[in-house]
Image (cartoon, rainbow, N blue to C red; front, top):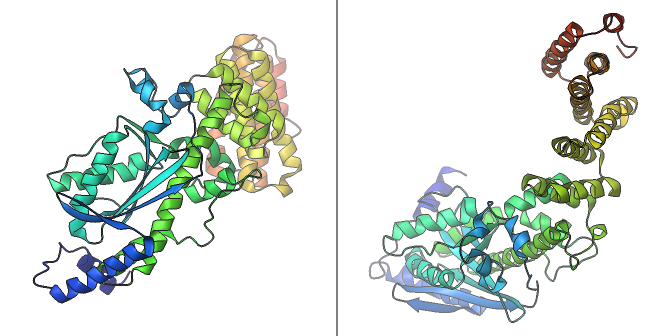
Length: 463
């Protein structure tokens, strides 16, 4: 952004114009405001703080989801639903209010305005969307008052990254008014965090439009809307700045549509996540595991694991592994399932998983031309970690220090081989080698016979 653009933005965000001083300019702006309302079929809402533009549209899709309290619990900090009355209104989707903002910047702070606030709620079997828009900065008080009244009617706020951005920004704007208190939601469901746990292993990016394409619109489903002509969200602040300076109203119609799709995507995502959670709890009316992507099941198993649902987590890990996972995700699934089995003292399953991880490195070595160096290094480190876990098991659980030393020696030889082949960074290899050497030295001191030192000194054929 050049210097002239920066000054233009400052000018656009200057305090509200005095109509009596700039009567001609005000007339031009009023004409553009009327033009925007005509384009959208929107109307001016008036309250004691003045006016703002309001637009309503009802959509038949997505359909209302019916959440189970146990599935809702996975979206919230533990114990929240135990509070008096919280579970009752949380489980009622008619008490939910979806919210998404369009702002003058992504950094937040007192200089950032939420010039459009879109809200949506379930109504008459579909989704009712309402959008509040500031035609000028002096309409902020009116918009915030209207939003506060709507939020007072719906105690559950549902957002996508709203805990980190949208709601803190709005709270700042309410404080700046010094007159209108925010209506703090009784419960805030931020869907970004479960979306990361569920779909980042498969997609990498968990932007809402990517989730719409690959999760909500995948598996043979088709959304009732398309983003093929959607505007780039990074351009939205500039469109608003241009409008404030008297530019055409037409580009803002695209911003309204963008916000509507975000709200519909948010509502559809809530239904998808809760359906997946229902299947994680084994509810008979939820979709069967086979209808879910194996990587989604892996993400769900991790989420259940972290929430202490160990029995269901193990079942989901096993199902995901049987269904087939990409090599890197499969490695993570085996590692985490082994940790869970160990914690539950199921050493039979844990050791079998560690053996699979340990042997996978040798397979990766033979086929390393087909995999990346990064993946090769991760496989090697996973195999070494598995060897260390097995060594710990044999040393302390079965009292076989010789077997523990053999495994440690093999891991050390594999590490040195990988270092010679350039499959692992030197600094990383040095740290791992020191750890393995320390373990091996300790095991030497515990050896029961003289066979272990000869094995160690002779080295392994892989070395």
